[in-house]
Length: 577
Image (cartoon, rainbow, N blue to C red; front, side, top):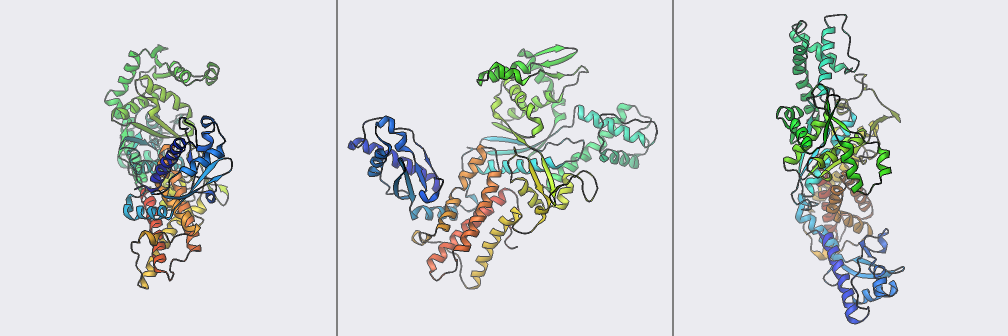
């Protein structure tokens, strides 16, 4: 049973029945029941829940909110609910207070559900595709990929916990213009090993990895490609270097504890004819035209129609300066945008109800046109959810760090994972919402003290294990408690901690609604804070055996919640530190 959900339902029914009884008794005039809100007060001392039902009904009942509140409270029946009393406050708010049954029921939930505590059927098994990182395979992965990896992996885990069938995917851009640039860069570096007059392409990839690949090929195969045609030479160099880059990406992701359900290769879209099929489909719908030897997509027309339906004015739309997009270049090659439309169509065709992409903030302008393209080909663009991620800066000693101490070059994901524990990196990158810029403090990331958030949470779990171990030496073993024993937990620190635990499932659901796994990271950090507060205020080993066991049950509940979250995020949950 989800006690908090049940309590809310009980309270809503009790308020509704009280209003109906007040009407029947003549305390209120006959009128339609008003819509009212039940929420947690800003200050929990004012109650565990509050309702505005009296103020919401002032107009229909044609009387003062305080009098309506009095009518409700005099007719309300709280027996067989998780509430023991209610009070009128201010202009007509009604505050409700939990009974001891609520706190006992929460702990009973955790004890019974164990590793499933916090799970729900909110997602109803709907298939959701989470595509994240999808770094260009022409070079090493960077800090943005590190942040996107942590956010995407944790979001997929949160969705699964909330009852969705989540699926993790990496899109490999192994075709198109960037691969041609990769090929030209490799060719130039290879030929430079044997000739002095080879110029490097102005738009080529300047990274040292290009030179390393060229040298490695030369060391293994010599100058066999020098006299080959440029086409054959580039093909051979790409066939040699690209698989190595992709293997390195897969290795880095595995080291980062990210295991994808699928690595989807762009080349398969071209080979299968799906890219061409998308262009044909848009043409059939009258949404393409030819100009200067290229095929264009009527992006401006499509997006304008969407914005007008959303109620935007033409002046607003004009300021956006929307433009049409090229689908097929003059040379006959499709653009990246065309392949991207085909890729997202393929995702929906595979049965995913929602497709979530985590992109860098520099892709902001791409969001509307991709959603519009989905609408244009007959899909629901609103089912494509794009989470935009801001830049991340590495900081050490209060200064921005751009170069690796080990290599003296730009810091890559692999460099970070050599310097920072993986669990620390995953947790820290998941502490700030994607839409905020982030300073990743290298000094904090390597610390093994409470300054490091993941250590702080892990320590709370280890501390509970230590408490249980210490008590076992005295012959004390945790056992199930009776409801009466659990009701002995009456201290404010105990109630505050149990209230927090009760909201675990709702926090998971909230994170899925907002596509924000950082909410859960903050939740587990707060769990650790409240536990330490409880532990410092309430001795676990006391003479009253029933109270001691109740407190042990509370410790075990906290241990379960922390472990469930760290396991969900694939972060170690140590029993000693």
